[in-house]
Image 1 (tube, rainbow, N blue to C red):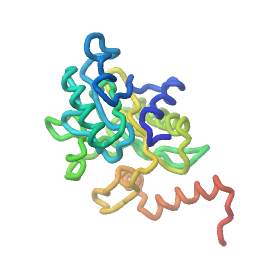
Image 2: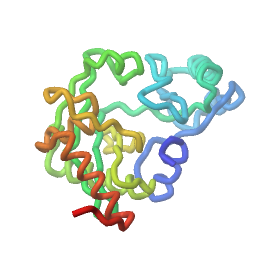
Image 3: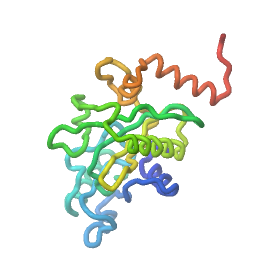
Image 4: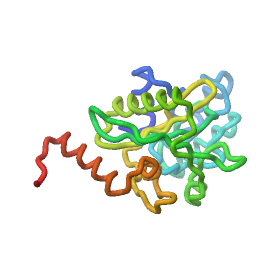
Amino acid sequence: IATDKSLAKRLWQQEGLPTSPFCLARSEKDCKAFRDNPPFEYPLFIKPVAGRGSAGINDASVVHNYDQLVSGVVDRFETINQPVIIEKFLRGREITLGVLGNKNARTLPPLEVVYRKGDITLTFEKKKLDDDSFLCPAPLTAKETKMMRQLALRAYHVLGFKDFGRIDTILTEEGSFLLEGNTFAGLMCTPKEKPHSYVGFMARAEGKDGVDLLDEIIQSAIKRLGLRTRE
């Protein structure tokens, strides 16, 4: 389910969870609603409906007018051959949370992605550079941390995640909003100083290494499936 970002957002909306308003587009015809009386205000944010690793996200993903919107939608659809999500652009702090388990799932320490000076989003090209800064645990108040953890757990269960996953959010002046759910989240915990995955970074902040992290995930799957382990 989570690989279809629009379906994930619809399910969250049905459960009353906060996420930005959106619609899908494949052509200029699908964009016409935003020409004269937009259903939600500019700036907008556009991305492929099933992109991974920020694929299809670049500096032009933040859209300020109708011409930019049409150009961005048509270019992405023709290049990636996926419908494009048009959503309200939310400015704030990007907070992501790893979640482990099933019925009694728990969150790992929240991680904040710190944009470089002048950046307003994390693009595919910037992600490839691997020179982002992270703060983990994210510098949140106790109230904010509790709120973000609860939101991530609710979002995780609504999408039917199993064993592990990652929930991406953004904390704005108006509150926290769900961005995406990731069932293919990387789990690399190396190098120790800056692991090559968000979940690995969170696990390290909790004092875990790769073996500890994978063991917790595997044990969750074993319990969920009712399997016996060798003594």
